[in-house]
Structure formats: structure tokens, C-alpha cells
Amino acid sequence: MKNLKKFLSQSKKVKITVVFKGREIIHVDLGKKMLEKVISDVKDYATVDFPPKMEGKQLIIILSPAK
Image 1 (spheres, rainbow, N blue to C red):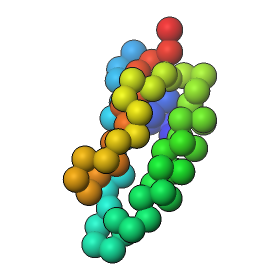
Image 2: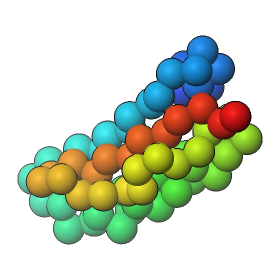
Image 3: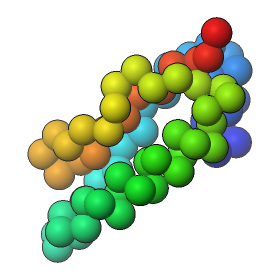
Image 4: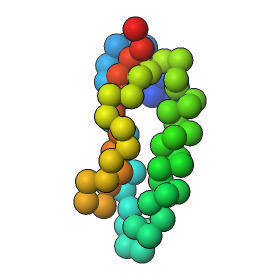
């Protein structure tokens, strides 16, 4: 979280990826909950450009600095 806030304070976009391996793919809902927690923790610093989306076995989200 410290590095995430540091990149956002430098006006850089951040891509967060959750990779599911093997049987973990069954628990995509836990990955989404984890990303929602990250979004709520950095809501003062960032806005969501790309909402959580599955791409293969990865759950991806893109954040940009708040203006």
C-alpha cells in the first residue's frame, strides 16, 4: 500500500493484478473482495479507470491519481 500511494502521488497510473494458480480460480470472489478493499483504502488518492475484470486466470484493475 505504501508503494501504491507513492506511485499515485507521483501522478503515475497503477495496475494491480491478482493471479490465480491451480484450484484458486474457484475463489474469484475472494480476489474481488481484496481489490474492493484496496479501492476503498486509496479512494482519497486514486480513481478507478478500469474496474476489476478477469483476463484468463488474472483479475486486473487500473487506478489513476485523483485530481
